[in-house]
Image (cartoon, rainbow over all chains, first blue to last red; front, side, top):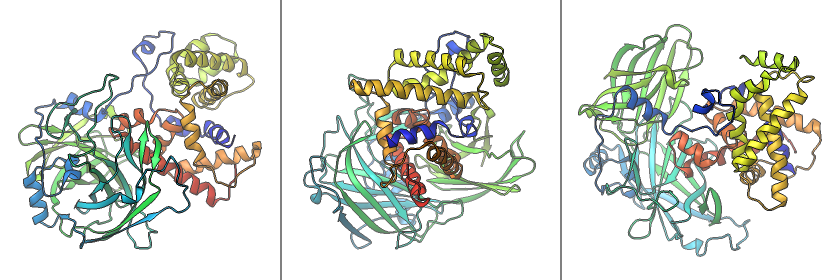
Length: 376
Length: 185
């Protein structure tokens, strides 16, 4: 079997890559118990670090968010007034049919069979809104006409792409997911109306993908490959491929369709630059300055000494009311030996004016390296 | 005990080596086997088989990396069990992994010789080297350690969809990489 050849080839990969992988020992093993037992996996390690170092001073709970940007942006947990403010500042756009170009293409090579969603041609995907800064953009889409049993299956786009050119050759980094009606606040999961999460008998979470009118919402995060690409004022091109039903991460039924969009990005930045000048003890890094916006942060370091191929990692913020938010998500890094830069995107939006300090893990590859609190 | 000392113990036929391997790498081997076979009993059997094999094969073999050597054996043992269970229609976690790996294979591929297999390993090593550390870790967690998408998603604090999509992109990138180099499996 060909896939077994690939499986066997992967079995022989270079040991150096395996050394990069951490695996946790169980208590039994640490006590030299001879019997091998499955390892426990740590969930949300960064939030764990934050709790240990700072202590969760408060957890903000949300009520139902009904802002101008639509349900697709609920994952970012911006309150309606912040959404309105971002639109007025031209840092967010609510799309209309005039402001975007969209087209749908059926995949003619695909066979229509029992794995094809019925009435696939009646399904519409419409861009709703975008929030962006220099470093990244969050774009929400509304999906109508796609129905399935969401107690069993999940919605999914087989692939999503974003490009900076119309010919769709220069790909941007992108990642998306359907909003499941659940927000994670300080490690606690609640529905968007603030009510506690419910579970099925088998312990799995009950998601609420659909709104009251049967629509779904998809949130796509887009950024450049490196740390220096500016998202503002651009036109970007997005392609969403094969909306489908997923069961345990396996595609059950697909639409065999592609949706493409031409989208304008906001023109104004809400990012605030601040000088910091703080050396991170026992590291070669000094944090010179940051750029902080509601959806991302940029950190600029000078490096004196051997950085050993690593860099500190932004993990969250402490608000002026004492609330600790572990919001650090994906990062893009660059380092030339003398300076280092990091762009980090948030898992939920913040109000930069309410931030008192930021939390930085000294070594992004070593969770035990210690977290530093830096006033900003 | 350092890995080199363990290997020396194996060469000297000192059974402490097996106890030390079990202590140091038991969980690692168990994780891989259990991820593939979805059965505690079968996974434990697989780990025991792996320990037997390393006892029989070292010496003459002198692995450069004990972790990689054990990983290769346990994956191979799990594959053998998978084939048996697959014939018996028993569900295995490996079925999904194999289906996903199918997507990485260029459509015109057909050969299966060993030289080709070595070349494929070299290409995968080279491709892995081009990936970011984060992407490399994702790929290896899924296709080397055979962790479930759900577990990997939880580890990184992402939802399953987002993780499945990241993995799907990585598979496509590997397929493109192999395609562009004219490689056939």
